[in-house]
Length: 232
Image (tube, rainbow, N blue to C red):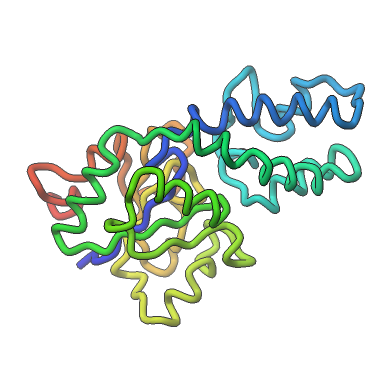
């Protein structure tokens, strides 16, 4: 029996496009200006995962940790990684302002909790940004634990991101991971984690490799008051 539902944050609970596309556009343009780069802005964007104004599925922007993104900027120009890290920290308020919930996100968390499931968040984003998200939408009551990109040296889909939780007694066979890219849907497949892909982020069905089930969004996780896996 599944007892824990772990949610990715951006693209799963949060509207990915409203928060990260404006940030990515602004960040890349400011990066080019800061370092007086001759490279084409579109080429730089594509290297990072922004193509024709859209975040590319499973790209470094879509699923990478802060360190992954900083390394990508560093590969484009010496000092770019340090600049990108500082830029992110300086623009946390803008990220909070642009945060918008996916329709049905709170209802999913609430229903799962009422049914006895433990709700967790596992995200590649920073702890500070994740805490800002929880505070903005007053989700403290519904979220029992968070694991963020700067909490561990590992990143999804490496199951070692949950080492501390496993050591504390988390049974991976009782876990369902819900997320919008392959870093989520491939998490812990060999360890017995069940994964559900959602189409509310950057990926289409073909990109959600390893998913045991794919739904449109978190609003489809519960049907008539029951968890969708319990309906099967």
